[in-house]
Length: 122
Length: 122
DNA sequence: TTATTATATGAACAAACTTTAATATGATTC
DNA sequence: GAATCATATTAAAGTTTGTTCATATAATAA
Image (cartoon, rainbow over the protein chains, first blue to last red):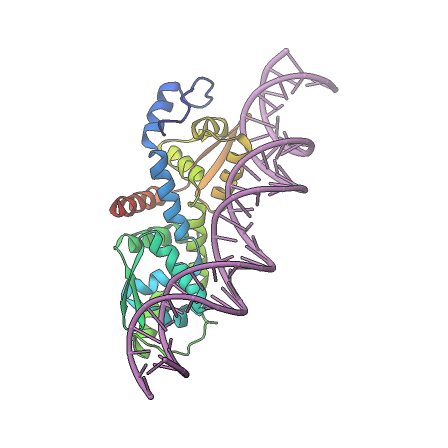
């Protein structure tokens, strides 16, 4: 798991100590686990999901994102900041407007996978 | 976006009204957006991420998940409940123990995609 | 039946998150 | 430079989330 995690695998019930060691190897280290969960957290809010779906097609200014997501300007700005901090979107300024776009295409992949799951739940 | 969302696309800045209508069609309806963000929320906590990585290999009882994630029994139970409510894991009882396992393989796919992104950020 | 083991649940508290309102900053136009 | 437009930031308020502690339930063993 991580260098600091305890490694006392005596007292396991459903798996052996050896299995435990193998399984734990397949869990990313703590830093990666934290990055993964932070990324998912950035994707865990409806307005942010909408923003990313809109940006999946093309870049857009904040004003238009505000209109199309039916949220307040301030709220959209806050959400964009969170997405940016997680390297999901990037911004470029052109005159008074700031245009946001997706950083990479992994996001779209994540959404497809997530939709597959959601639809699987039915 | 959703049947209830406003559809006043006059006053857009960076895209045309027609583009707006096209883009909005590509955003899932509100219910799907909510499901997607809820699923991501379930994945947005480090202990839950670890649990899912462990279960990706094989089913496991709560006690062993508690040991391997280095969390308290109560905390793991609460997390498992959230994962179950989101149809990410399922449980079967065998004697005193309850064994949890992944519901489907989409989760592993989601993790790979997310790791790709996290590593891309570097 | 009582005790023990494994897991789940409920309440309480702190920490984190989201929204709003007000204001600040940056860029353009008059 | 003053006014305006687009976006960002800050602080405050309300809400949600995660942990812990205590306790409940379920199954088995003594």
